[in-house]
Picture (cartoon, rainbow, N blue to C red):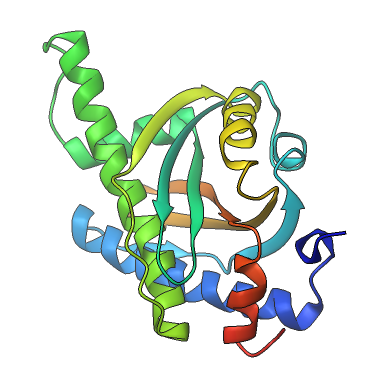
Length: 209
C-alpha cells in the first residue's frame, strides 16, 4: 500500500488545514481588492480522499459546476482544481465584469466570463500555493489556468483519467468566501492532487511526517 493511501493523522490534517487557513485568507484579501468589496471567509475544512470518491462526497455527480485547473511544478509538484457550483460561478463572473454584456456576441460573452473565472481561479489557487511556499520555502511556479463547465462527475472522470497517472489521492480544502455587501457566497472546494510521494515530502517539510 502506498503511503498516501493511508489516512492522515489529526496533527497532519491540522497542518494541511493551516495551509488552507492561510491560503483562504490570502484569497479573501486578493478577491476583496479585485472586487473592491469586503470578502469574508469561513474556516476551511481539510480532508484526504480518493479522487474517485470526490463526486459522491462533495456534491452530486450530476450537479453542474465550473472548475478551474492549474498545475504546480518545482519542489512540490501537484495539480490544483477549484470547483464551484455553476450558478455561483455565473454570479461571481457578473460581479467581476460589472457591465451589461447581454448585447454582445454569445461567443464573446463566454470568453469574457471564462476569462473572469480564470482570474478568480488564478487568485484562489495561487493563494494556496503562496501559503505552501510561505510555510516551506518551496518555489512553486504554476501553469496558466484552464476553465471547464460540466457535471461534477464528468469533470472528476477527466481529472482521474489525466491526473490519476500522477496520483490518486486528493487533499480537499472546503471553504466559503462571502462577498459581504451583496450577500453573495462563493462556496467552493480546492482539490489538490499531489504527485506520487509529494504529499509525504510536504508533510515532512511541515514537520508532521
